Each structure stands twice: as structure tokens, then as C-alpha cells.
Length: 440
Image (cartoon, rainbow, N blue to C red):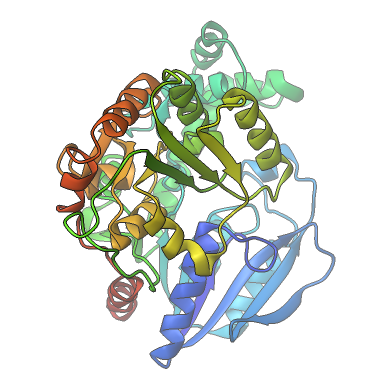
């Protein structure tokens, strides 16, 4: 089969979880003798370009910046997107697999792929689940897990609060009915954004249904997410579940009988410096613990963007000079298995709906238990108290209590959990499920 993997960003410009996932998928499909190509927008680029990454042909097409409000909201065509339409029509693929919905690679491009007669699949790696969650986290007001049902007034107030409006002002703006909101949304600046938000939510609901209509399958990474998509109107037969898997090279470390956990317990965080990863909650939890409580916390992550550098600086400021905590550079991919095996516990305090995180599955593969939040993939991967500890997202008090419990009694927590860690799903299993979807 000729298979196109369409993604919002790609190597070498970006090195994120979705890019790693797509690269692993492409490499394994090539091993199965399929012809695979990757296509991705190039925001701000000047001309289309083609190059190879890991033996796969990559096609990038420029998207003009800055976007207008209508272009950013998906109400107008994004200049540059027409290149994809022409390219996919000329390429005549058997399968087009979308992994992100971004300007220049959205509903219009899904329709263009469908028009070629290709089988069209979309996997949502983001908490927005397509166009359902405007806030992009599935966390109601950033505090609790949402019910997942998109409603104009509720979702408008939530997104406006994220954008900086006080709760009362967000609720007042969200009270505007949809039709007047469409008119008010044409006003310039922040006032137009605020008053037009309920119409934007209603527009996104229509886009979600149109997206599902033009897909052969919409793939989700968790059962909760799949159910949420169905609750928002998608036919069950168009929704598929394909959980995350690890790429490989993760050998289990000696078990608790051969190598019991000793004090001080070594905790670790490995991931992006991003508030939605719960890094501020982790800092609040740690700094609330008495200094006489002995443990170590090793925090690692890339500082590859202005936003990540700013979060890292704030994180270091919150942690102060606590000698128990170190903040270091990212761990090279080849060293991740050994790094995770060297930890006693991995911390994944996610503050959004995630499919994994993948690093939690990698930790399980080497025999390291996880302390995380009761949301997304972790809630379906772990059983609280049996093979790890789960707390409510954003509840740093509960996270602190979990860290204290483990630090005080590693044998009664970590070593018991190590005996019941679930088997790690592999990327080969993920690919096998996709090939079945491609061939249906």
C-alpha cells in the first residue's frame, strides 16, 4: 500500500511525542513493505521542500503567517493549504493517516484526501479530541476532569477563563446566544474573541461532525476519549481504540526480591517543561514536604522553546535551593531505558487528558512504578495502590502525601507495586492494529 502520514510538524524542526510516534509507525510500515511518505505544513516557510528522514520521504509545504482570525479558527482557507490538495490528488495514496489538526492540515485537507478515494484515518494525540475541547486539556476550568460533552455556554466560559478573563466575566460573555455571538465575533481584538466564543464553540461542534463524516476511522488512545467522541455524536462504528505502545529496547531491571528499594527513594520526572504536564503541581508538592523527609527528585526535560525555558525558570524558582531536588537537561533517547531503570518511582502529574504518557509505559517496561494523576491513559493503565499511586489532577496536596508515603516506606509501597506492574504494550502491536484498519 502507498500510505501517507500527515502530521502538523516533523523532524528535524520538532522532536515531540507525536513526531516520534509517526516516525516509529512509518519505519515499521516500511519493514512490512509498504510505501510510506510523510507530509507536514511548514509555517512561515517560503517554498515547498522535500527531504528524507530515517529513509522516509518527507514533504513540507509553506503556510503563510500570520494567520487572520478566520484562518486560525478554521472559518477561512489557510494560504498554502492548496499545495496539499494538489499533492495528495497527484500522489493517489491508498491510505492517508492524519495525526494532527493544525492550520494548513485541518478539515479542508481531510476532505481533499477523502476526494482521492483513499482510505482516510485520523488519530488524535491531543486532549482536544479533534474539535471537541477548545481549552485543549479536557479539564473543566483547569481544575477537574470534564464530562467531555461540548456545549457552547459551558465550553466558552472555560476557554475564556483560560485566556485570562475572570470567571465572572467569562461566564457573562459565554451567556450570549450563538447567533448574536456570531455577529459580535466580528468585532476586532479581544472583545470580538470574548463575545464570539459561544459561536466559535458551536462552529467547532459542526466541524467535529463534519470531520467524522469524512473519515473512515477516528482513532483514540484511551477508552475514555473514545466514549467522549461518541457522546459528542460520532457513530460508534467510526471510532477505534489503539492504545500507545513503546518503541523498544526496554529490558526489565532486577525485581524487588533481588534488589529491594532502599532509602532515600529516587523519584524522577522526564518530559516537557509545560504546565499541562503538572510540573508546577510537582514543585508545590515537593516544597510542602518537611526538609527532614529524605528522598531525591531528578527532573529532566528539554528547554528548546522560549515557553519551555520560561517554565523551567519558574519551576526552579519554586523549588528554591532544596538539596533533594535537581533539574537537568533532557535524557538522550538511547539513554532513556537506563535512566528510567535507575529511578525508584517515575512522577507523571499530568494536568490534561493524555493518551499515555508514553514515558509511563516505558517506566513500566523496565520495572519502575509510577505516581501520576487519575486521568487519561494512566487511569486505564494503572490500579491505584496495586501497581502505583493515582491522585486527582491538580491535587498537589495528594501528590505530596503520596511522595511522603513512599519515601517513608519504600518496601511497603514501591516493592509491592513492582510485583504487579502491567506488561508494556509495544509499537509493533500498535502498527498491527493500524494495518488492520488500513485494510478494512
